[in-house]
Image 1 (tube, rainbow, N blue to C red):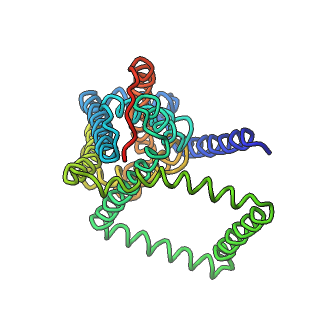
Image 2 (cartoon, rainbow, N blue to C red; image 1 turned 180 degrees about the vertical axis):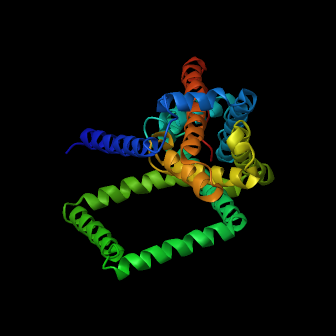
Image 3 (cartoon, rainbow, N blue to C red; image 1 turned 120 degrees about the vertical axis):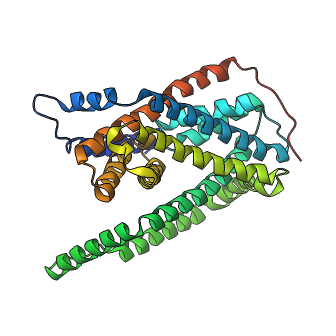
Amino acid sequence: MNKTLKNIISYALMLGAAAFLLWFSLKNIEAPAGKSKLDFILDTWNKANKGYILLSGAVAILSHLVRAERWRLMLLPIGYPVRLIASFFSVMVGYFINLAIPRGGEISRCLNMFRLEAVPVETSAGTVVAERLIDVIFLLCFIAASFLIEYDKLIGLLKDFIAKRNSAQAAGGSSFPFLWVFFGVILVFALVVIYLSKTGKLKNLSIKLAEIWINMKKGLFSVFTLEKKGAFMFYSLLIWVLYFLMAWLVMLAFDETRILGLEAALTVFTLGSIAMAMPLPGGAGSYHILVPAGLYVFYGLATDKALAFTIVFHAWQTLVLIIFGFVSVIGSQLLKPRKYESGK
């Protein structure tokens, strides 16, 4: 099976998973008599305060601009004083591609930066990996904060889940053999290594990986050579504060979610961030499962209203990325490339 066919199958599976999750979530909408599900969603949009919606979009773009500036800081100490406009275009192109090809945006972002600023792809990829590690730390902090704030509700749900699981096992159910899956993965990995070793491909692969690592580690460890470490940490925190503010502003736009408070906004933001991290196109499907479930379970919002809110919220986020992503694709073609000598 060639690489192209594998990519097509992988992409088809991801689209299929997203489509199934969307269908599964949409079937829970119970529209009022005489109205279709689409009418119900459009009514939700029409009743929204558009001022908060537009402000949320502006905050989203500001967060992406801050991310572009943080990326500039990471590239500077390794010899690439790239332009902010080039960094912003590349970030937005990455988000734009991610809507269609999960995780493809990171590569597209680095390729775009290479075309505009001649930053080696492996080097910029190293900075992107470092960025992701920092982002994971901040996401874990928000998850911890959400857990502490909603501790009583979470413990109650966990106890209920354990009780139901014990009842199912007492009735003759069995748990999934995760340990066997773990050993299976280890076995497959060992067989692949043995095959590569016997065919002589392991040495060539090791040499290629070593070359990639030499270029990548410049970007990966760029955080430790930053001249403005304080600015880097401030930008990192600001990005996530703006993400939270974006979610809160959208919640303020709807009567049903406005009254839920900051705690609900934190929960929606956290669940949404987890959903967007899943390998599905733009978080489609996973977002429409996790966020409505959180609004229903934690705050008692009716499932149809919770889902209608989520669809509008996600659609607005996606529309902003499509518009500015497309503008960035065009802008990247119009922006004159610059060349820099590689950093030492």
